[in-house]
Length: 359
Image 1 (cartoon, rainbow, N blue to C red):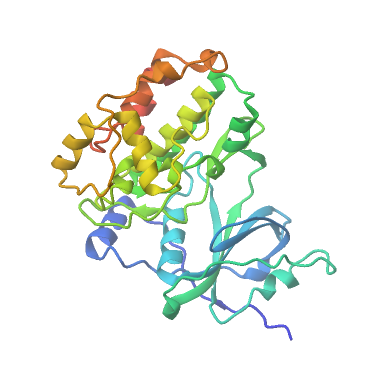
Image 2: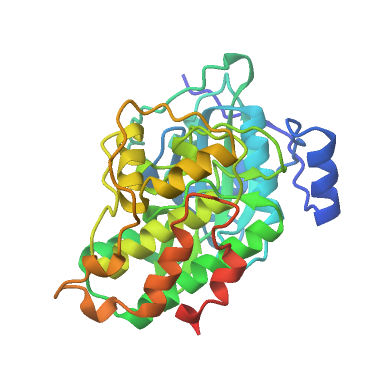
């Protein structure tokens, strides 16, 4: 028996900076509902990816055959879905950021049979995917976010793994990443999951920052969950469970990617778990600045063993015959300004764009 995918109205709105600030200041846990288009305005052709709570498909708009990407969210909290849509709408028109076209929200009781009906080939089967469900069953929903199609076959991780790139390309990629982050941060939006697989690269070496599912509006002084992001890219404040973090967690993650490219090593800090990741950071930055940092922000250090390294690592010790042509004094200086315990002293995206590395 086929159950049709029913859709609830969701209103897509664009927000001015003042409206965003009013929303944040009034109630940081409240996110507006959204009106949607019609799911049957679209069809999909193949699945191209899977996340913990979502599946991603290539497809097209039926009216004009315009290619699109459909992100089908399953078993996620309504407030979280609304927040992602709101943030994507706020980011519309900004450079190097994936663009939302539409959003269609379905009831949690509905199945994803629409995707079976939408196949171009009726003999093709929809892959059976196991997706996680939020523990908050009272507000589970399903939703589909429609994105503009990007003609890309690579992500930044693919380029790093190939090892086939120049210093000029590295500068070009990372200037675009900082440009995207700077625009988002100006709107008080943190991405919170920066990593190479979330940076698409087209044939012209233009990048698109994707996957804003963990993004959040920043509200100074607000305590937020530290259980997000990918371990190798987590800033020390997240690993120290300091909940009043800010945009600088994104900058740290970009620094980890940049170091991987410059030194041709991945990951730069190969922690086995969160505690081990913090130990790797301490081994790189030393304990002198660490103790000053935790005293300043009244952070409790929960590690039962602390690496006995007082001074910072000299990044020049990482230079070898495989990477020497990618290392510059400007690049090292930028990394040193990113890899700082104190998030308030860390270089921000706007300052990074003015750094000599990109001039």
